[in-house]
Image (cartoon, rainbow, N blue to C red; front, side, top):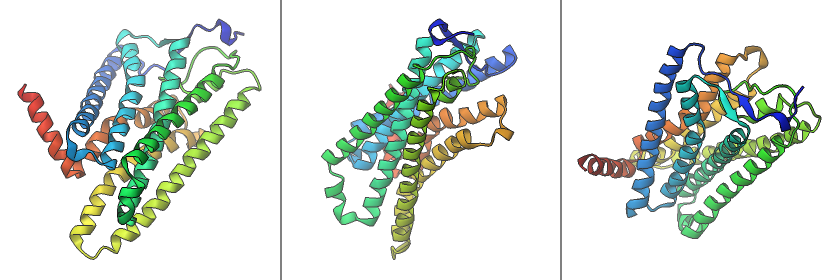
Length: 309
């Protein structure tokens, strides 16, 4: 029996059983990582440099790209390192840092997606009040609240999780440090505090989800009342990318944490975890760029200038 004071490192779930497959997954993760860096980097650069994109929607998109970059940089480099060097080790402090930053960025992303939904709701359902409700000061305050809430959420969960005594070994059934896997190593009833915190966090996430669903019901009702087909198409083109990103984020996350134990297996858990933690940050820039003509035009100019250099 060991406790948390004697644990200096954790064992992560290996991505594959053979060295050849691990090497293949290293190149796959490297491709996803570079795609996320380039895609989100181009969006951040385009929004920051082009004054035509200095709108509330693109301001929140810039913040979303920052959370995507943070999320993928928290998980993928360590997974690539372990695959390349055929190891599964992560230090105790490294695990705590990874858990903190993952919860921080994933929480901030959920809150930002909720704010972006509110932005679309006001733009389509209350267009005359858009400038008042979503002025520059209000946008800055909402973005700051999303980041601060994510930070507080991550701080509470990390401090509470790593204050638990651990006596069930040091092997985690996940390829990165995750709260449920660490709770499985606890031998104290005090883990119920963290369960309570998780219930509160999931309740807040569920409230965000309900708000998004309710907002889109109102948005689609308003769009369908627009008389011109061109107006309806323009309204849908600004909403569909956000709806696609929310659907990808929520569906993979819900399946990961709410799937029945009967269909749970290490390989399935690994695939689903990659889907909700690695794939969305790399796909989000593509989803937003496909339907946003202004952003697409700016990205084309930015990429042309980048490659000409």
